[in-house]
Length: 490
Image (cartoon, rainbow, N blue to C red):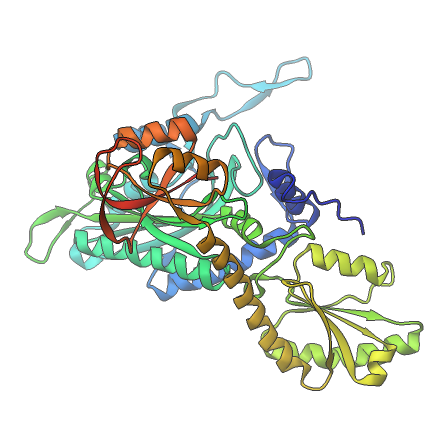
């Protein structure tokens, strides 16, 4: 099987696209800017969804669903929110097509909507308009709702999973009696995202807070998890927003508190999207294809028989049937690929490309010797191991692979967080080593904007565990109390 993957050192962007397409994760659709997520790619997304959904439920949230279409007037109720999304909105203006008499289908100009509808770019407005009817008293709080949905943000430059016009995501929207409760919710969900990124995706993240320039439109504070990809660029992997009372006031969502006073509720919203698929690919993969952490791999173990005749195949299959039962009993997903339409070498290349963590090859001689050949995807090492106790050995090895993939990414990130103490040093690092650059900033949006315009680097976050230290801003020379993390980003 010819992989035809561009080396990531030659052309990182093409390498990424090659893996997405050749590993059968997704492809470009006939709708400009939109993608088709293929079954193998979608099965990874389903695993992501399943784990996160359980985490949301464990923290007291329930799922609901709100309309795809949002009346345009809703957006005008929260000024900064509409300003943040106005340039990305898809607008529905008519509700009918007709034949023009020449065999062409055209929009029926008489079927104009009384009010245009916006195709959901995010759901704050429609949800807060709905919450007005759900919340009257402190007894109705907290209201903890999550939605799994698709959203549309009109993009000029797209890249599969990372930035598409339509993408899949979840969005949590919660209402609380006090600001402290809403902030606690915002921080809790950030921790949920960070735990998932590190312990399931094996992607180390920095938890931090966004600057006002980078804040979500309509939020008082935006918390984020920032990850580092292998090309030294950052990727925002999840956000959690403290919305204050902005949306409650815009949509007049009030409640009677325990003292009988009427107040506006306090809010949070938080979300992650199919962008996590992009993070998964870019954080771990190599020139042979996808490298998947076992916890998110749709197939954790693939078994390929190598045989000369039907008798050998029968013996191997009998052994494999027993092994599959044992592995499935341990919660391990297994595929036995006994197709006679492809040679073993083709299968090896296919599963390496698809990032399957463990591959077993079993031949006639292995059956005589009571062994199997085992290849692990993360290190590409092969070893001969006994059939005796193989199920327990594999279970432990999957844990080791998960840890190894995380530690490799963590070491890379540690090596790519560099301090810069002057603007020249900052620019040299950006164009050379890349990664996160820890530098002093004077705290003004103007300085941040000038750095962005001159270098395309943004402040990714102010880390939550930041140490305070006196210094001078690398750009303006004005006093600064702490370093922040800059990077070029996706």
